[in-house]
Image (cartoon, rainbow, N blue to C red; front, side, top):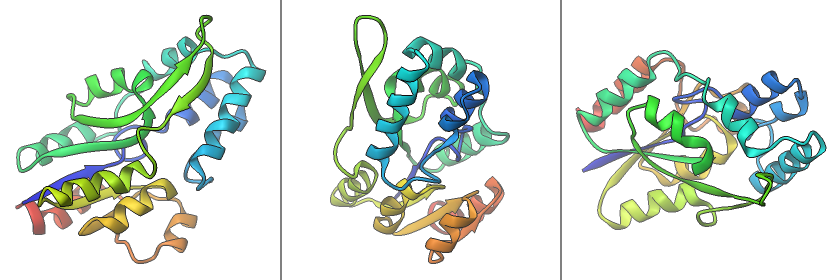
Length: 200
């Protein structure tokens, strides 16, 4: 039996940090895992920028509350869920994801958590586990599932490699160039054609 694992931002929703950058006028926050493969390095850098500009958790949550799913994402998720299970495996945080999950019809989400101080300042983050996307696929395979995985960034690559089938969705040119082994899709209908081979 096949199960689908997918990234969140860039696949079903716009990038949270790019939206934060645009709303706050802080261009440094536009940097994402499409640019920086080292997620820990990227997050430490983000936390430093937030501190420099005195941005708190609620400031980011206010931006996220205004983000809408990508056109066609809700219908695509429903299409998948009518055929098999879908797990969103993301490097976002539970404190960010709630309004996005509600708008997407609450697919199952595996993600991380933030650590705040008494002033609502984000002081740290806790990863669910090392290399969580790959290990999620690995765990499902240990339960005798086969996995089709979708993502758009460097932090998705180990998940795509581990899956029986990995698909890039709207990736930047640098990711395509660095990982030409994966099919590249730009529209949900293209993903459906690939998934149709596995989930009908």
